[in-house]
Length: 363
Image (cartoon, rainbow, N blue to C red; front, side, top):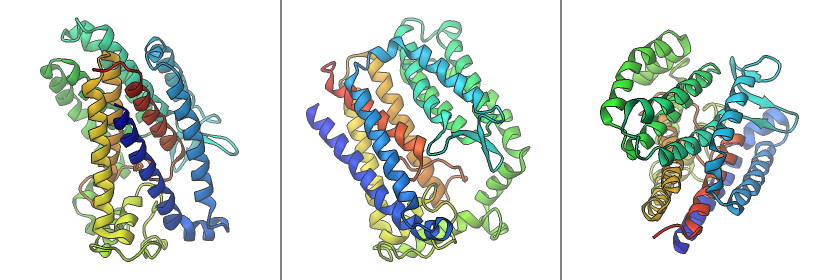
């Protein structure tokens, strides 16, 4: 397992280093124009990396099994924060969304903490209810109620995409634990009408779906971002136009250094660059799978599985959105995109994976 830890560490560091380079490349001109400092976003990103490094080492120093004892307090704190962020004057509203706590030098998105808290709680629940996990009332309904409450709070921000991503991870964890597939499918089928209403009753969500189906119906409006992203990817060809030479980052592609950084990678580094990113995430998955396969702790097994599923799901969604094969959703590319809370908690998650793999609690 030592080699697995080394490989996982190297892959993560490689992705973070790529992110540092690409964030500067994608944001330099915009930062200079908006903040009179081409290094504005890079400096903040480096602070996030240092913060994530500190907390990653912190979670590596503790016995991860202690998290099982504190899974419910951690979940409760996360729930309180999700409620507080919705309170005017406490949570910061940006573009109609109330998702952040903003301080002078620091911003925090409680839904990112909730992702990790929910994974820890579900891993704890599965390990405690091993003999009842296949029952409906005692094995399936309790985590479903907790998930429903969390999803309602996240949707209220509003952030439907994050709620769907978290729900997907929890359902996959429950499926791996042995929850009857009929229970999961029944809830999914019952949720489809509600999802339809949540999407098509809200104008901006409806426009995102229509733009996804045919962005050229409104090329200067709802379809603009997808079109510019695809132009960036297509312009790169096989080898790319060269590092730093992207044209789409010059105020054509919105969120070039955050949600659509994969498109800038494709433009500047070409198919080889984007393929390299995908290969790194596949290698990341393989190392995580080795940890899952070898751990004997049921809590560690599902904690690792949940963390891997969340990181990889965010990567798949981000790459899918950038490529135009998924509707637009603001999920950052793990370890690469600019984004404070997301990066910090992704790094902490890797710290937990390294912790689990080094405890000796494996075969």
